[in-house]
Image (tube, rainbow, N blue to C red; front, side, top):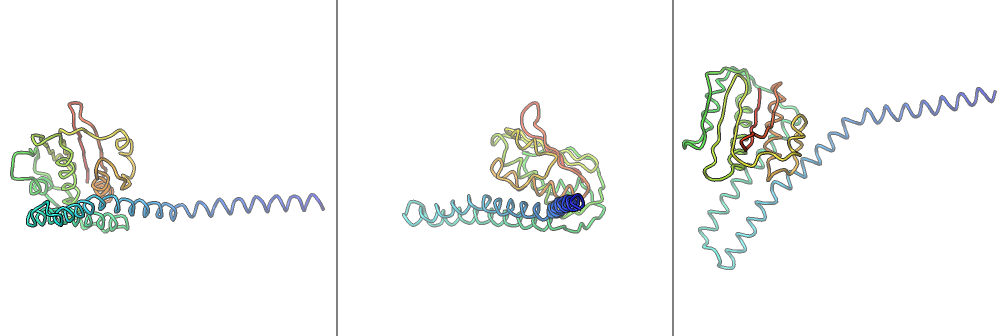
Length: 234
């Protein structure tokens, strides 16, 4: 009888441990979602902290009479436009993370990229006629983010950006400082909306998610001659 009771108790303990393990396993998606939400909120605070602080500084400067009202208004307008763009990017990331539906159609990827380039000679394009089945709205957002990131982190005013369209891939190269070792280490994972290199994390997180929704990928490299190389495939 004692052996039976002991065996029953042991089986009960094993069953309890298995149940706890299964419960923990089933909660993994929930915990991952909560961690992602925490990262999203942290990124939102990080991305908006700088423009809000700058707006406060401009207001205080204008109130003291250190800055002409018209100049202050012009600077505030620029900051508000930038903050609005950041908010739109954050909302887009949230929609993509929730599972956006792609609206694919045949698109001339080379022409899509060309429409996003500035009129000056700061960017050169090397592209052949390429038709890709993709969501043009999301592809536009992804390429625009790569171009803005390259302009933001270029070495100086004379820094040049080179864009290549080959097949379903768009590659953007700049002459800046390149990526940190920490960011390169995360290239095959979620870019996680973390404060990296002055806001690079948000743009790359969006590009990465757009690429993954299309079945593609985002690849980061540092060029041997200096600068960064980013390739997104759709």
